[in-house]
Image (cartoon, rainbow, N blue to C red; front, top):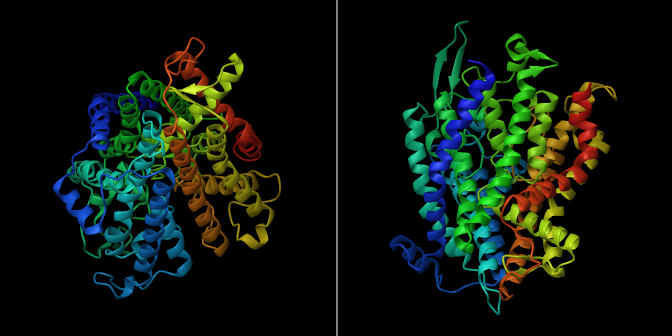
Length: 561
């Protein structure tokens, strides 16, 4: 079976399942967040926490709740790691060092799941499910809550700019969406051989007589929410390349579908909630175009090395699992970087320069193809506002989107949201490379101008792009255990997560204060092929203008050599 045919077959399966699930899942999400009824367990939680579920919050109150909840989560997870040595099931593991505990706490709370440690030798079977897995649920629920709050800004008219209740949105996203969906996915993964155990591990003897200790953990339960919530942090160091996490080609397809399911379905949710499903289909078309283009580039790059077919060039299988091959590895890599997942079933550092550059560009686009759980939808909506503004300038009309005028305040907030990530990536990369002797930069370095030094720059650029976009994947040749990387990447994760959230919520509050006006004769239509092209061009142009110089110094220069 040729790589092209195998890739086409796998893409067809993924597309088919997503197409079948698109309407029911998207409409279910809309009903979940629009419902006026509380489940019994939800009502109990509200009473215990003294929350009035019928009280709507302004954007500042909503943002304050997001930040307060996230701060409490960071502190709890940090302390849990520090004291894990005295907890039951801690085994022989002691407390995690302060720098790693800080980086990990920030990483999981921001939905990044960047791991600068070896999970099976660092985190106990208490910290994994009680700390890390819980954050996999609630951090994803936070992203969905912010996306829904922005949708309400388009459909509501409120003098005070109320956009909903964060605590209700958080609870519903966790209990009604993520928990039942991940339970089903975990059962499917168990049927494929993914393990679920609280045992410390077992020993085995290799063919050369070496005795090896194999780690065991409650993998299936965390693997499901790791992919469904676009989290990505593996319970084992090899992540989804490990046979205990991803044993078969079928489980590989299941995990890819889980990664894409909610981000894709949220476009239907958006269309349903705003009362025009063509709007959601337009956003989906843009996501699909970008995802398909980058998949084609990555697959072609990994299947062909300087004109030599992959079947004759075994080097392209370096860093890839034989059970997945090039098609399964490329499909997973593009899906995990197009969302904020960061899980890997192959070593991204072993990708060809063009293939590695493609998955890096996938993150630098802002992870909108289709983006993370919630984050993808609100990110592409911000770009849609900028596209409408540009289109309005071209035709000389006041820009409007879904009946809401885009005034100076709205465009300023949209621009700040878009600029936050590039600022973090470029400043972090520049400081690290310029001060390489003091920042602990140890990548694939070499003499200036050599392929090794160029790839070393790509590794640093990838690391900060991954952190600022809350992705979590990495080019594995980079050593990130120094205090500089632990703190710098931790701050990138924090600012990369919460600055856009604050700007998006402020934008939602501003939109909610406006009355909806019917479209006029000169209003730019925001559904259909024309706007699909405009929005796609805007997304590509923003990334190209911002990151082209950096890409030219890294992946492009490496590919040309």
